[in-house]
Length: 186
Image (cartoon, rainbow, N blue to C red; front, side, top):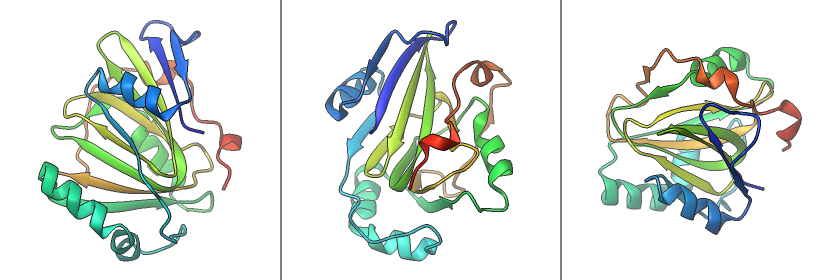
């Protein structure tokens, strides 16, 4: 079940607010300009599917988003607990960073934890199969896939280069919860 927890950026111990309904998550994130939608992730795609297979399965939705928002690049990230580079990839996303463009992810399978640092609050969003999150440009955030990742996500970018991070150098991500491996069940 997807959920949202909102913290003060100075206190990771107690959430100021917590919700598990998609409508409430979308409303709370919408207040800070973050897109959160529920899509039908019913196309048969499994970890290990090629990028072309995943994109082909969701081509209609991808093309709609490209028309609406001018996205130029689309890629797929797919990880399982057996992936040989899972620890390196996890570390790459775990530090607070931003992008000069929107970052959009649609979870085709599995789940991951997006954490957004907006103003003096931290928004922790567990995204699962069927969730689409759109993080606005220059929004500080980090992403945790757990030590045993299981997810397939389609990523859309306005930059043809794809994922380009601007790391803040802050240690804030170390002070907030990580996604435990046991919560990632296929």
